[in-house]
Structures are given as C-alpha cells and as structure tokens.
Length: 146
Length: 97
Image (tube, rainbow over all chains, first blue to last red; front, side, top):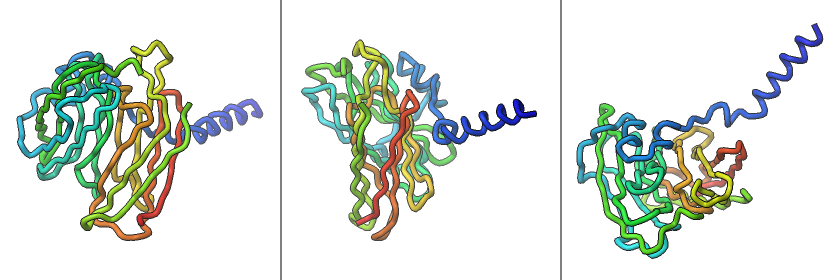
C-alpha cells in the first residue's frame, strides 16, 4: 500500500516538476531534416505557392553569418504561422512561429547562416494553404561554429 | 550558461511592440560543444498564449526576438518564456508602457 502510494506520489511530483516540458512540442522530423525539401515535408508544406504578400527584410550581404537579422511580415489573410528555412544550412529549418488571436503575423529574429543561401519563408494562411517567398542573403563568414 | 532575460513592451502605431532578449549559448552540432539550444518560446498576453514558437540551433547566441500584438493598452501583462533541449527554462514578465 505504502509502496503504491510512494510510486503514485513520485509520478505526480515528476509531472508537476516539468509542466512546461510536458506541454511543449518540438517538430523533430522538420527540425531534424537535412534538406529544405524534407523540412517543408516535415512542416506539412511540401509544395507552397509563391506569394508576394510575404515581406522579408534582411541585409543583402551579411558579413557575419553568426548574426543575420531577418524581419518577416505576412499580408496574407488568415496567416496562422511563419516558418524560416535557411536553405544551405546543415539543418535548414531555423524556426516556426504560430500566431493566435491577438498576435500580428510579424517576427524579427537573428539567425546563423553557414554560407550564402536563399532564405525561404513559409506561411500557413486561410484554409490551411501554404505560401512562400525567398530572398538571397550573401554571407562573407559562415556562422555555424558558434 | 543560460542567464537573465530582458524585455520591453511599448505601444507603437496602435499596436504593441515586444522586444525580448534571452541569454543562452545556442550551441550547434558543428561547434564541437554539447548541443544546447532553446527549442520553445511562448508569448502570453494577460495570461493567454498568443505566440508559440519552435526554434532550432540556427537561432543566434543570446537570441533577440521582436513580436507585434494587435492593439493593446498600457499595463497589459506580457510574459515570454523559453525552454531548451536540456529542460532548462526561464521567463520574464513586463507591463506594456
């Protein structure tokens, strides 16, 4: 009886200790992908439609690949997520942002780029349809050793 | 080592602009050091999740993110939390100024 109670209490304590970890999800198949195509498949966005309604603001030339600022806004109605794919990185998917009621489909972040490459932004919009836009960023010194 | 966070939330053009800085090594598989990076970032507005992000080792060391929230008012509570691949976490809360 006591042993059962201890076991149950132990399990309960373990659950309480990591509430965030238990709730958080991380798309292993998309983030573990080694090609941009596999990353898109992992996101469920294998064939996105090209769109000019996705605005990518980034430097044309990044001298330091360790810190490349990228600013993204989507003008597509019903945008629910924005994903950033650095096409020539060893693991191309850099980030995916989900926007719920109250958030605007906008994000600015700094990423590491291994070499000059297209940055592909993939947006999920109304009806669960996927759209994408690309922008080339030239990298003088690669930044994945950090 | 993972360390303190900084955050600023201000009203701009009728919306709320959130800028948050995290102290984290964000080490890659290529660096020769143990892989250690933030995987999840959550932004809450008055206790409700409005942005949920999954990120990889490709995000730069000591990550800085800017987000925008629709509308907003002075005093709204913004919370940003992160969780990394080793189960370490941190969060910061501020009121919109």
